[in-house]
Image (spheres, rainbow, N blue to C red):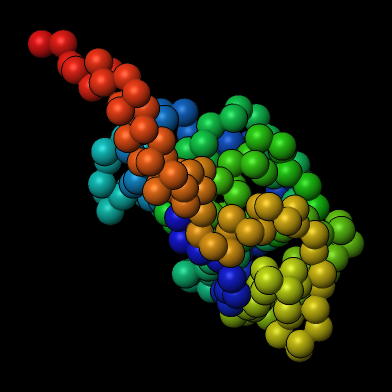
Length: 215
C-alpha cells in the first residue's frame, strides 16, 4: 500500500450529499476482484452519457460535459471535496479502489458512512472529517479560484490552505500509523514474517506428519 505522509493536490468539488457507493462505482463493475482497472468507471453513471459495461474502452464513451470531473479545470485532481454521508449504501470495497485508481489520495467531507470510511484506510485513501462550516468555506474557495490546491500533512494532522492557514483534523492513532508507513492488513502481518517462519519450523519439527501432502 502506498504510504501517505504529506500530499499537495488539486481539489475537485463533489457538491452532493449522500453519495452512495453505487454512484461511486456502479454494480455492473463489481464482477472483477482484481483490484485494478476501476478508475475509468469512477462515478460512471454521472461521468458518461451512455451506459458503461466492464471491459468497455473509455475512449469509445460519451463523456458528460457537465460533470465536475470532466471539466478541464479539475483535470488531475487528487483531493476530493464532498458533502455529508459520503460513501453510504452497500459495503463494496471497490468504491475506495475506484477513487484511488482514478488518482484521489484524500477525501474531505463532514461525515462518511462507517464501512466506506474504514475501507478507505485499508486501501491507502485518507478520509478527512472537517466541520460542515469549514467544508462549505472550502467549496466556496474552490469555486472562486481555479487551480485551488490543498496540502494535507498527515503527520501533523492539518490541511494547509494556499494562504498558509491550517485546519486541524483528527485521525485514530493506529490508522495514522498504518497510512504513514504504508501498511495494509497484509503488510502489518508481514512485519512478523520471521516469527511466523520460526513458529512454522518449530511446529513441523514437533509434528512432522503435518509436512506430508496427500497425492
